[in-house]
Amino acid sequence: MLIYILRRLIQSIPALIGIAIFSFILLHIVPGGPAQTLLGPHQTPQRIAAINRALGLNKPLYVQFWIWFVNLLHGNFGYSYSFNQPVLTVIGQYLPHTIAIVVVAIMISHLIAIILGTIQGYFRNRWFDHVITTITFFFWSMPVFWLAIMVVLIFSIYLGWFPSGGINFTNGGPAGFVGYIDHATLPILVLVLATVASWARFMRSSMIDSMLQDYIRTARSKGLSELAVVFKHALRNSLLPIITLFGLSIPSLFGGALVVELVFNYPGMGLLFWNAANERDYPILLGIIMIIGLLTVIGNLLADILYSLVDPRISYK
Image (cartoon, rainbow, N blue to C red; front, top):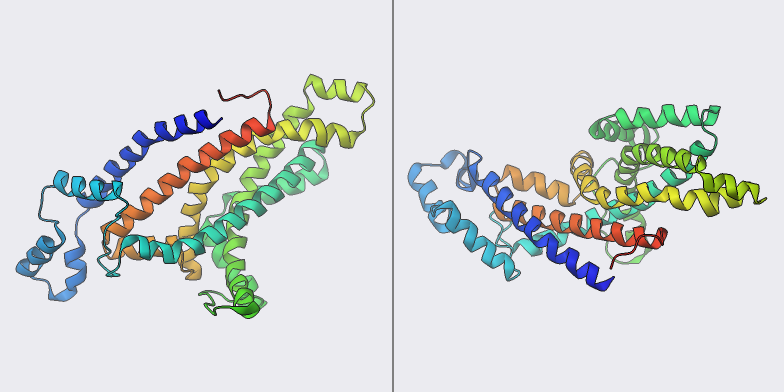
């Protein structure tokens, strides 16, 4: 397994290099630049040229990329134009907030999806299956920003249970932790609603397929109870598609977090990415893209490892 993990990590290096080249070129061919943003209404051709020289943006694109890439290999993500701080320092202030809501959302979403999908698959075409299918299709078809706005209207404005945005930065003590949970609840709820619907559908289909297999009929013919048939035989094999989605859910949830963090003014990577895009802060944008790319590689690798744990027939040698 260790050799397999090392081989996968080595194989992911060309993909990360491709992400770096593609994202660097795309960001730099977009019209406008950090000089125009920094100068605002006071921009002149001379001032723009001076700032571009100071930032090294007057050099050919391949030279800029090579300088940035070599620094990246040495762990230097660059210096933010708008924050006047190293990129890693800035990202380090925002990343924990996004990881907090994304990790909690993934755990809750998978738990709910597995429970709902298992029950739906077992009681397929019954009233419970139809009700849950209707609800999940509703949330599946709704845009994330619309869900976020509806959640704010219901739980913040009408009911007043949770704050509509921002975050409590009180440090230390239970009050700070409770305040943080208070502000993070609604963003987590939106991410869960936006993702659990699709995962429950996959789990339902996988559960139905498992219940129709020969080994299920064999288990029943041996006199096993229905609980043993479902939880010991059908559920374990039905988890394989969900594990695949787990690896893919990390980058998708980071993308969904961008919209959610904008609506709730939540200080995470999504809000940082949005502000950096408006400021043309290339080092911050490239740093976020590379970190999400790395998390995607790790997520897929983690999914492969979980695959072998759930299904002993799969061996990575």
